[in-house]
Image 1 (cartoon, helix red, strand yellow):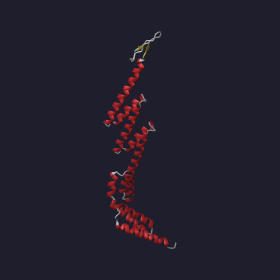
Image 2 (cartoon, one colour):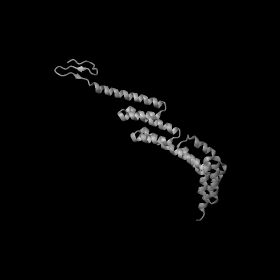
Image 3 (tube, one colour):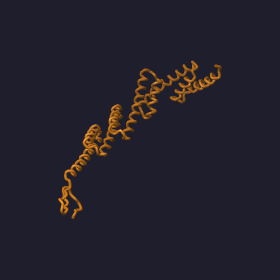
Image 4 (spheres, rainbow, N blue to C red):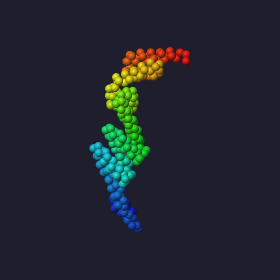
Length: 231
């Protein structure tokens, strides 16, 4: 039997006493066509992604995967687009839309590590934004203590938040006055713990505040003296 070293699609093998065996033209061609289509769609999706046309890229990839969901490369790039789009949305303040997008992606890819990390990151960003908005709302009603605590909480989660930094600096004199006033009231009522706590807040904001230093020291001394008095 002579077997050629290379078989072309449609070429037959001659075996004595048997019918020629022909390579399956249609099945091979179908596999080749599907692979070419997948590569073409991936290339188009990458072009859309690089042009910041995230939703168009998502629509194309999702449609392609509905027809043939076996391409690991298409799935991985779809996840890349989900993450990239959510970052772009978050960067323009559209945190709710970013969270919704990632939540939708997690329905399809529930165990994907990149999507879970992005979901956690967005949740922290939402908390930071909520703290910032709470601080702004507190300023409107002149609740300086609440405003200070809200901005500090936001900056603890995201130290680079420029809005919170600017507002904290803007309200600094009012916040110092607020905590100093509260400390003085508590001291006069001999509520030493509250007085000490409020002067400590002043020193958090202004570590060199000599008045807060001396008053806090006096409050600590009085607290110890009051402990020694008969109950």
